[in-house]
Image 1 (spheres, rainbow, N blue to C red):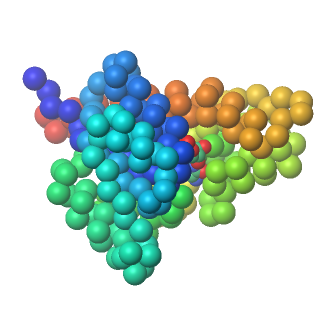
Image 2 (spheres, rainbow, N blue to C red):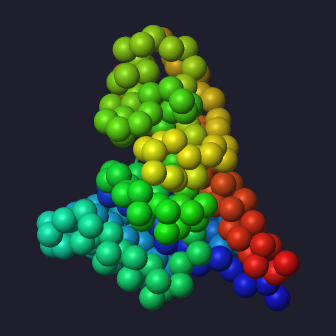
Image 3 (tube, rainbow, N blue to C red):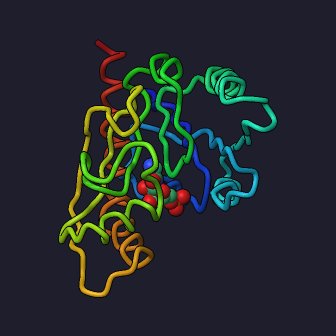
Length: 205
Ligand code: GAR
């Protein structure tokens, strides 16, 4: 029998994308990987409650407790290695990882971003700010992107994208909900499955 890829999900907030991954594992959409760990850089993240409810081990790693981003990344690396993590999923993780961290896990980190990259992405574009920028520009179509993470913020190879229509009268909050429901919660689990399957397949060659 094939082994499953060990997945760690990095979060900072509500964790609806984490929930989509948990649900996908239950429904069988995510079948080549198993979520074994959740790491939050925010001790108050609701995502931690979702992990607890699903019986998934979690850790909190903050820059404040570790003294610096470097210290926090060092701690995360030791936790990720201890848990033999094959794939790291950034699901609303609101911190930019250093080049040395992303190099260490080359093609082993994926991120979901709430726009069609290369629009509205890079440093400073996160969460609601992305939807505010899309509405301000007046684009008629937006969406979400899942991509590999490298040293350039939102600059790694694109894995999947899904478009979402902007509607008359949209607020950033309304648009965020539609992009999550109609794009992020669908393409993040599908991408997690795709990359997990690739990792396991490669190992068996
Ligand atoms: C999601 O919309 C995610 O795409 C976005 O933050 C939200 C987190 O929601 N991430 C970024 O903007 C990263 N650049 P969640 O905690 O409910 O999954």
